[in-house]
Length: 206
Image 1 (cartoon, one colour):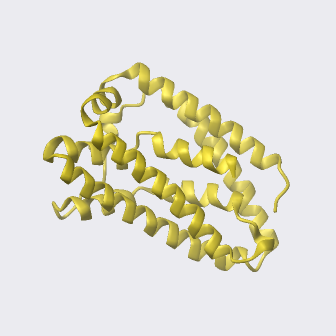
Image 2 (image 1 turned 60 degrees about the vertical axis):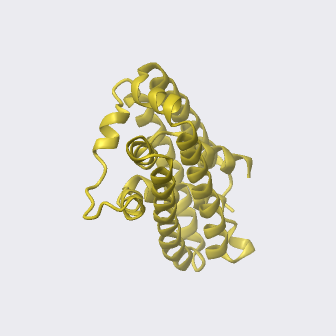
């Protein structure tokens, strides 16, 4: 559980399209608009969790081999994600991330928040690679376990967004304009993800 909390916390504090979208809406329209946007990204994250849980639970609850494959592939993906994050640390640009979010047909911050999170494939890949590592197939209730772990991760993400909203001025400037902060944050996050993926790949599958 400590490993899951570590990984989920890393996902929550890493500035990505969802957080940057919430920050942009907050700076443009005030804290109320930021909170509504954060609610939208929360709902979008939960859609990812439920969709992943439905697909994974149907396959994994019936096949121990499939469960093991998903766990190992997920662990390898975490290592890949960490290495890529470290390599891209010098070139990453949060502002460009914010500007590259999927276009939306509506201006409502709630639905734009949902679209921003739902249309972010990295969120789905992270859930599909991370959460199965901590699902105990032998305990049963695979769908429920997946939803509970995923919901907690989404809750952490939204909590981080709300902290950014509450401190939009200093945190926003730090995230958007400090290359040193951005580089260090992504390098540390990438290193921990590599370590986590390596540990999970070598650990015994449940």
